[in-house]
Length: 263
Image (cartoon, rainbow, N blue to C red; front, side):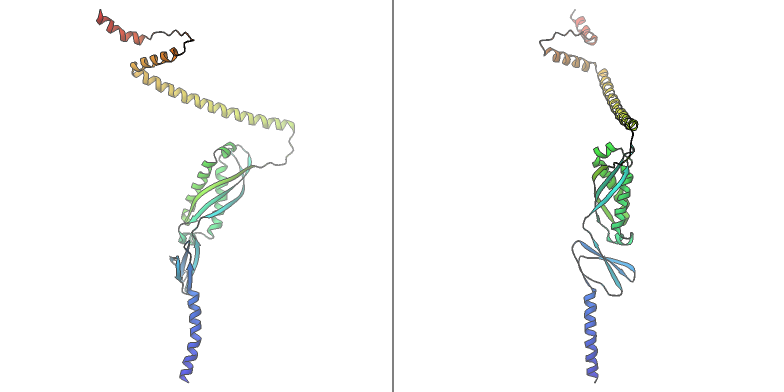
């Protein structure tokens, strides 16, 4: 009777033990890590390979370490020159610290997506439409740096951001002819202002370069003479033109001591 009782108990416990053993086994791929909690507290990060988790005592959350490609939904952005555009982008990021990605933020995929949307609106809203179209690479880098800095505490590394499309948002508004002419004049005045600013900056840089060159030539008179002779050589190459050049006083001054010695 005792033998039968032990045999019956062993026959019941064996399947239970086998079920618990199978339930405790986890297999993590090379690109996966498991964040293990023991009685609700963080214990350690395991993987890849075979991982044993004690049922009822330990729980494991899988984390994918591969690069995630996330499309950012089209965002309504008002540029600094009051032009309404729709901008969408794609963000590339990956988890570098599984512990932070699970503990520090709830649903890090959604959090990164929302942060990318707001950052895209804030960064592009500081620039004019021409800058958005012409300096897209610099804007990509600016958005990437801001996202990377803010997601660092979540254990996430933003590797790249690419702005895909910048579309003008055309609203159906009835404009009379006078308003159309006013908008055209404003746009033309803005273009002229930018052209004048660019021209003035070029003149300033050219004047600075000329002043530096004049200062260097003034410090070395012989350099000025060599420059004069070089100019004469260039002009003399054209035989069809007759040019009369004044003789520099510096050259005469240099020849006076020699003439006095010969006399």
